[in-house]
Amino acid sequence: MKRIRILIPTFNEEKNVEDLVKAITHHFENELPQYDYFIHFIDNNSSDNTQQIIKQMAKSNKKIKAIFNYKNFGQFNSPFYGLLQNNIGGGSDCTIIMCADFQDPIEMIKKFVLKWEEGYQVVAGIKTKSKENKLMRFFRTIYYKFIKKISSIKQIEHFTGFALYDNSFIEILKKIDDPTPFLRGMVAEFCGNLATIEYTQQKRKAGKSSNNFKTLYDAAMLSITTYTKRIPRIATIFGAILSGLSFVSIIVLSILKIFYPNIHSMYILFASLTLFTFINLFFIGMLGEYIINMNVRQLHRPLVIEKERINFEENDDKKNL
Image 1 (cartoon, rainbow, N blue to C red):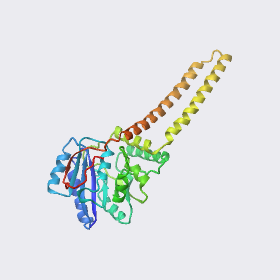
Image 2: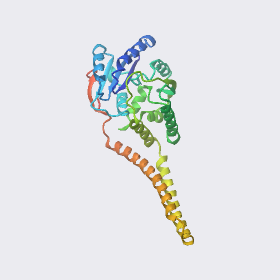
Image 3: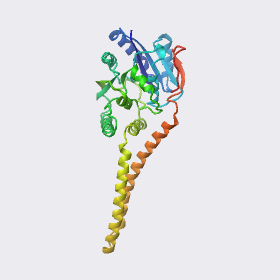
Image 4: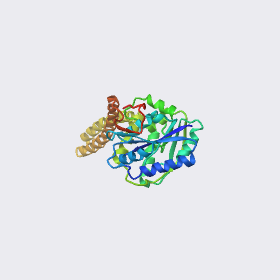
């Protein structure tokens, strides 16, 4: 009997975790009775009662397992670390990552599994529609198209990481030594056998999303600085052009000043230099993002540090990757 692991990253999801476990259990019992499964939470140091609720459920249900992080290690490190722990609990044949807030439809589990049985390494959910804020949806669409356009790797539009990952692909991910993993990009880069299934993203069932401008900005910068070389190259070319134009402007204005003493050349020069300065500052900022990204990778810090494991066998692998 094949075994499926449902990996659920959590942070302050006390209002959702119990209902989610019930929904997943009901789905397997009624739609996938021929498969064994277990539910694996990885909690990013929640400040509410999420961990306590998970512990209570795990006492009476050995299919519920959990890793509690020592602190919040971010929206990318924690799920990626959890994904790499595919040998826990006696092991599994594949792992499905899904959100704890019901935005990822439960019925997609069966669709993923049936597609996986056709031989695919990764079966990814693609958000073709969403019940989220329309303005947010608009900006996300622009972001995905922008990343896809400038990336050196063909990126997957509207893919959030909600997918089924075969163990063969997880073993590939284990070989990648990256302390700042961007899973969506890794799927696009390293998966040679990918299937996609479209779905409508649901509204959050309860609680408040931990996503904000900072987390969205981090996601955008990580994807840009990891998967495109074009921006620093554009900055180099654009900087050279602006430098040349500035030099020519100074010469032209100096000559005009000789023949037209009353010309307000300083105002024209000031406006031109101001424009060029702001453009240069933008590209310097982008180059700084690349440097930050490289610096973090060079430090080789662990993805997460575990505080506690729940319902794990003693011989389960435990690694602070």
